Length: 422
Image (cartoon, rainbow, N blue to C red; front, side, top):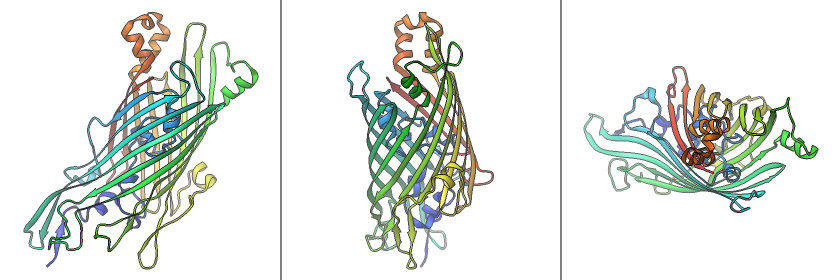
């Protein structure tokens, strides 16, 4: 007698629309980008200038650089994202929340060239209710299934002319298929849940060209009397989900987890305004390009194995954004005005999985608005509440949307709230 499980074997239904080489690895929810800001830019985050808690999930090195300016940050989805909305699967949702602590080793009120950051991120994919039936449609079992990952990150930042972050993450991964237990006669051999541990490492390098020139010359670089240029290239690299195999058959058959290498570059250019009484950013434009390679292959016996190295070409894949059979590329753009509002565009190309989509998004910073008012209206700086908020507190909202044509990811939307203290 045969039995059927709703949503077509779960992993195929959930992930075939996004991940390349789906049959190569298990728990592919680890490849979903949690950062909403990054999702507005095609998913690129490894070398980006956003060091928010959710960006740390794809490159732990962000935590080291974030710690220079941020002592505490919390980022969370106010409501779960409906995953694969075009499939209309009830209960299929994705959620993320992150927490960050940073410490400048120079101590309170002192700038230090070394900082330390730690972070925690929780990712949840709710697969909804699953139903086991006979061929005739008789319901044998109902159960809720889900997958989640807990990631603890630590990173060190160095700031001497250039900024360098080096980070490491430990990750616990759980896949809960609830009702499928080895003792049942429904699907013998399967176990109800499986788990595995893994780790990530990353590096992030930023080169603030204008600041370096100013330091060498002993005077700030100016455009006219009050404008200063910003020009900073960045390079990022990470390797994620480095760990063992995972088994849903009590150890008789093991599958690899999605070990992945990412390399990215970014460039930020902009203008800052400053005079004797006020200083604030006027505008900036960021471009980011990133390539990703799933380091998992199958041999002739369909046994999974991990590949070493990175498998990516900095020129062909990253700089030009050229995707290939084994390489996914992401590119994104962000325009920031007065540190108050940002507009984002991007694209995601996966020729092997035949997944192509464009992205868009925006962000709003209440504290950025208060800081601008404080700089243009000195009375606000003297106000006990508004002055404190403008100097020490950030409150941001970010939104992103996928445009995938007729694909299952079309009209997937994300939003997040970030609160941070400086």
